[in-house]
Length: 116
Image (cartoon, rainbow, N blue to C red; front, side, top):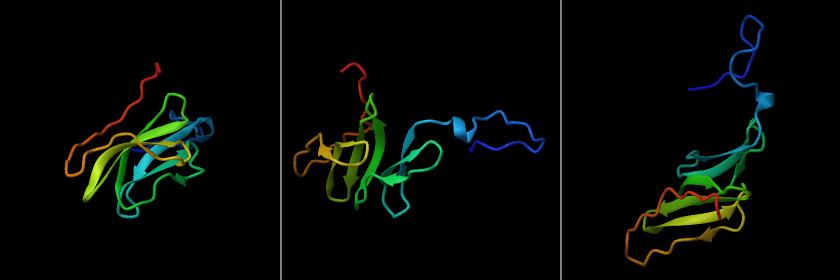
C-alpha cells in the first residue's frame, strides 16, 4: 500500500503524515541490480545511499538501538550464510558469525538488544 503525502482534491490536508513531518532514516533492501543490497534513505526521500554493493544477498537489516550500526544477514551461492555488522554509513563491515567450511548453517534475522 502507499501513503499519500499531498493535499486532497478539496484543498484540505489529508489524514496521512505530511512529508515535511517525517524525520529520520529508513533502511531497506533492493534487488535493482539483480541481487539484494542494503540502502538507507532519509524519510523525506532524499539522501539515497547504497550500503552494500556486491554479488551476494544482503538482507534483513536491523538498526542498533543508537542508530550507529546496522546488523544484516549475508549469503550467496557457495558462500557461507553469515551475520554481518556495519556502520550506518556502510563502512567498517564486520563478519560476526563464522560458519565452518562445508556447513550450511543459516544465521538470520539479526536483532539488537537495547539493554547493552
